Image (cartoon, rainbow, N blue to C red; front, side):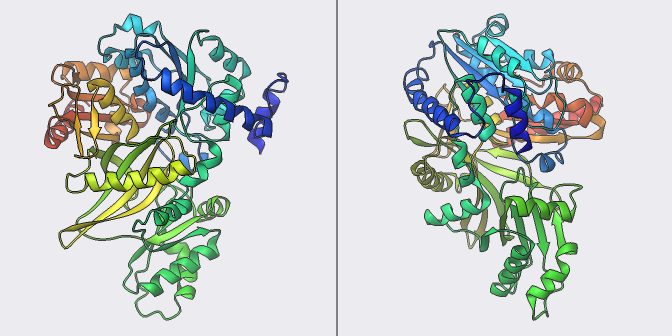
Length: 519
């Protein structure tokens, strides 16, 4: 409520601006979204149509949990892949960030544009920033700066159709869309709760999918205790369970509970209550029991079995619902999860294993159609846990992310650079050359204390000297992202595109070797 008051006071000099969250604002937003259907049908297919895309890479989520992620402010750079839209010669891009982006990083992306000179692209690129290093969501910072909003509006040419592209869409993004008078290619914030952990379980059951044993709509510590006790009673051999806050990010709203030592216990509820404080291990670093429970009480959440097995994979399916209601599978990935509890997103292989990629796509379409019927628009992902039993894979959907994610920007880079498409019926990605199949390995978490102190200029120099770049002629190679996080946090993102999965991993190994040598 505090944030809404600040934003309201920042705009109270403009009487035509509706109050954040008001009926007037919601009605204006819905009219903008209705207009977007026509833009999608007529402007999107035309590569020469004049248009402006406003990129707002705000991760508008719980800031206390996000603050535990190293270099989180630099995650705004992940959507720099959208600069590849400048390959369309009449498309303008406005990109807004919290802090200035080093020009060498911008140049790095523009250098990869196929068929467009850097000069031509720069004329159509506008960069704004808030000069605000605080942990507040970027969108909130923009809303607190009405002069910045006006400058954004001034840079949209009068003959252009415009829309916003966001990491996720909340009431803050809706307020910004209304003030800019442009639609958003994303889910209505009134439907955002459909992507909560609790509602995800319900939607999966509606779709007839195999949901892990568990309980949703839990409201507090007592609900967690009851659910943990019931799970153990239902499955006496259960070793671990996962407690998840409804709106977590990259696993950092999760905690793992161990039942070790409860073999001879009769009253599981009493035992869980006595041991919850010591046996609940949090994925987010440096988060206390009290803070986790406070977050759980405010956002609610679920408890479900920690699925075990060997082999076990963590695939995901990326889907899209277009403004005209068409559902499509964009990609599939096998995610690499790490951390002590195996809950933190580290990276991903594209596409998912050929043993089950097609099957996952079919499940993804089922979920996409269910969400479309509830009004969902734009990109989202469905995460699974997959366990092989008796030579057959069993897939358990565990969450829906109604937003862009860790696999969005790598795939967009591949798609922009190769102009290809993922064939969901085959589980294979083909480039525009038709016969060429491509794979990649990507990570947001290539890190070492040795990398600290390397500036973006240093990284680009190392990459050029050691031939670590993307080769458009072979359609293979390496792209870096999260470059701004390198110097302070020793952290870097990479996408390694290869003609085989092995080739993609070899390229990643080469990066690690080169950085070790150079540092």
